[in-house]
Image (cartoon, rainbow, N blue to C red; front, side):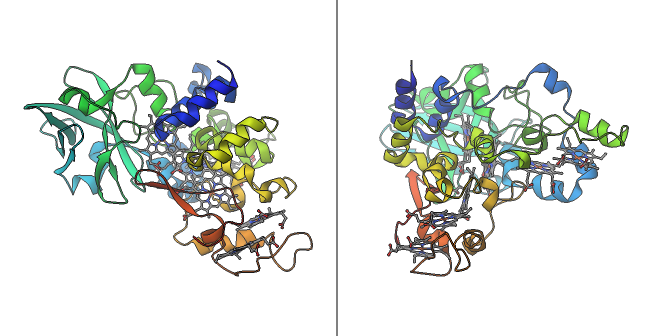
Length: 370
Ligand code: HEC
Ligand code: HEC
Ligand code: HEC
Ligand code: HEC
Ligand code: HEC
Ligand code: HEC
Ligand code: HEC
C-alpha cells in the first residue's frame, strides 16, 4: 500500500465526504487527523473558560460555522421548521421522510420505505452548518449507528442522496444509512469536534462539538495557569498558529481542509491538477498557484481568512487582499489588464464538485470569466 494506491483510493473514491475520510487515513499523506492523547485531554478547560478573558474572539468564534459544524438535531431549528419533508429515490424505489420524532430524547427521525416495509433512523447529530448541506448520524432502536443515506442541501432546499451513497439498496433497512462500526463513526467526527477521543455519537457533549478554541490552540490549562497564577513568567504557554511558517500554517488548516502532499511528490500534484474534485480541498489547490509559489513565503490561509469568523458576505472583501501584492505600486507583481474589482469571481471560480455542493477553487490563476 504505497503512495500510489492511497492516491488512487482518494481520487477514484466516488464519495467526496468519504474521500476526505480515506485521505485522513492515508499513510502516504501522514496522519492528518491527529488523535489527542489522554494526557492532552487532561489539559482541556473548555471554550467557556477561554471566553472569560477573550470575549471579543469568543463571541464571534463560538457562533461561527466552525463551532456550529456539528449540532444535535434538536438544535437545527431551520430544519425543524420545515419538516416533514419527503424524498423519493426512484432508482431504488425508496420513499424517505424526514420528520419530527415521537421519542422524548430527540427531535428528528428519518424513515425509509421500500416494498411495504418501513425502517427508522433516530437522528442524533447533524454534520455541516447547512451553508451547503447537512448529513446525519443516527441510530436505530436496536443500537446500530449509521450515516444517513439522504442529506439536506441548501442549494435546492431539499433532501437528496448523500454523495457517495448513491448505491443499489436491497431493502428499507439498507436504504436508511451506511451502517458504521464505532471506529468508522469516530473518524467521521474527527474533523468536526474539538476534542477527539471519546467521540462516539452518544458521548459527545456541546462543549466539544464543532471546531472550538482548543481544537486549534491545544489544551489551555497551562495557559490559564500562566496568565493567572504565574503572571510574571514569560510565555503564554499556548499555541498561536500565527508563529508558524507558510508551510506549517497550510498544513495546520489542511489537517481538515485537505493536507497538501510533500513538495517533492510531483505525481501527487499532478493528480490534484487532474482531478477536479480536489477543489474540495483548499490547502491542496492553493499550492498550485503562482501566488503561493512566487510570493516568497508570504501567502497563507491567514492572508485572506480570519480564522475565527465566517466568510464575509461579499467577494469584494477579498480585493484588497489580492491588491496587497497585485497593485500598480508593486514593482515585482503583475496587475490585471481586465478588471479592478471582484478579483476572486474570475480568478477563483466556483464549481459544483459533487451533486449540489460547490466549492471555490483555491488554485488562483488566469481562468477568464465563467
Ligand atoms: C484568565 C484569563 C485568560 C483565560 C481564561 C484564557 N486566556 Fe488566553 N490570554 C490571556 C492573556 C492575558 C493573554 C496575553 C498574554 C501574553 O501574551 O503573554 C492571552 C493570550 C492568548 C493567546 C495568544 C498567545 C501568544 O503567545 O501569542 C492565545 C492564542 C490565547 N490566549 C488563547 C486562549 C485560549 C484558547 C483559551 C482557553 C483555552 C484562553 N486563551 C484562556 C488571558 C486568558
Ligand atoms: C478540526 C478541523 C478544522 C481545522 C483545523 C480548520 N477547519 Fe476550517 N472548517 C472545518 C469544518 C468542518 C468546516 C465546515 C463548517 C460548516 O459546516 O459549514 C470549516 C469551514 C471553514 C471555512 C468556511 C467558513 C464559513 O463561512 O462557513 C473557512 C474559510 C475555513 N474553514 C478556514 C479555515 C482556516 C483558515 C483554518 C486554519 C487556520 C481552518 N479552517 C482550520 C474544519 C476545520
Ligand atoms: C479530514 C477532515 C474531515 C473528516 C474526516 C470529515 N469531514 Fe466533513 N468536513 C470537513 C471540512 C473541512 C468541511 C468544510 C468543507 C468546505 O465547505 O470547504 C466539511 C464539511 C462537511 C459537511 C458540510 C458540507 C460541506 O461540504 O461543506 C458535511 C455534511 C460533512 N462534512 C459530513 C461529514 C461526514 C458525514 C463525515 C464522515 C463520513 C465527515 N464529514 C468527515 C472535514 C472533514
Ligand atoms: C480554526 C482554528 C481556530 C479556532 C477554532 C480558534 N482559533 Fe484562535 N487563532 C487561530 C489562528 C490561526 C490564530 C492566529 C491569527 C492571527 O494572528 O491572525 C489565532 C489567534 C488567536 C489569539 C491571538 C490573537 C491576537 O490578536 O494575537 C487568541 C487570543 C485566540 N486565537 C483565541 C481563541 C479563542 C478564545 C477561541 C475560541 C473561542 C479560538 N481562538 C478559536 C485559530 C483558531
Ligand atoms: C502574497 C502575495 C499575493 C497575493 C495576496 C495574491 N497574489 Fe496573485 N500572484 C502573486 C505572485 C508573486 C504571482 C506571480 C508573479 C505575477 O504574475 O505577479 C502571482 C500571480 C497571479 C496571477 C497570474 C497567474 C498565472 O497563471 O500566470 C493571477 C491571475 C493572480 N496572481 C491573481 C491573484 C488574485 C485574484 C488574488 C486574490 C484572490 C491574488 N493573486 C493574491 C502574489 C500574490
Ligand atoms: C472579469 C474577470 C476578471 C476580473 C474581475 C479580474 N480579472 Fe484578473 N485577469 C482576467 C483575465 C481574463 C486575465 C488574463 C488576461 C490576459 O492574459 O490577457 C487576467 C489576468 C490577471 C493577472 C495576470 C496579469 C499578467 O500580466 O499576467 C493578474 C495578476 C490578475 N488578473 C489579478 C487580478 C486582480 C488582483 C483582480 C481584482 C483587482 C482581477 N484580476 C480581476 C480576468 C479578470
Ligand atoms: C488569496 C486569498 C485566499 C487564500 C490565500 C485562501 N483563501 Fe479560502 N477563500 C478565498 C475566497 C475568495 C473564498 C470564497 C469566499 C466566498 O465565496 O464568499 C474562499 C473560501 C474558502 C472556504 C469555503 C469554501 C467554499 O467553497 O465554500 C474555505 C473552507 C477556505 N476558503 C479555506 C481556506 C484555507 C484552508 C486556506 C489555506 C490553505 C485558504 N482558504 C486560503 C480566498 C482565499
